[in-house]
Amino acid sequence: MYKCAYNYSCLELFRVFLGANSIKKQLIQHIASKLHDYGFDVYISKDERYGFYTNGRRVVSFGGQWNFSVDFSGNYVPSITNGSGWQIATEKADITQEQADQYINTQAPYWTDKNPTYTTPEQYLKTYGNSSGFTKFNQEVTA
Image 1 (cartoon, rainbow, N blue to C red):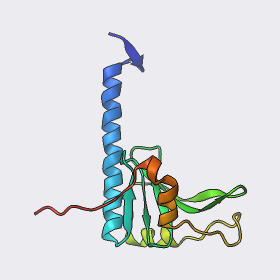
Image 2: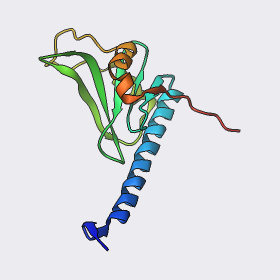
Image 3: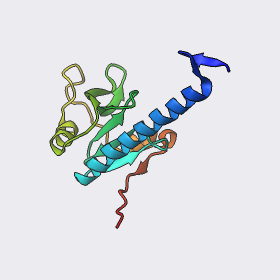
């Protein structure tokens, strides 16, 4: 049998990848559910590996490369000097109401423009909606 890496067969590595992918999706669903319960509008990417939430005026995106945690980032209108956002919190596996409120109200760092224009949900969807396939999160209630 052909070995892919670390003495594992390609099939074994594929199974590990699928399991990790499932864990990431479950974590994103968990975060989205909590944010939805806290009263925010939440959008999830088509592949369910990242998303964003909004208070109607601003956007905080969440996702990341790790399977067991997510990062949260603030977003402002892109500029050559400042990019398009900043990282607010890293490696989180859960979120509280207090954290969600704090993240959505966090001001841009000192090194950005003095008065950055924060990204609205409409701007974010216009910029990333097609490529990400965002859909509004709707928590289904089961009896």
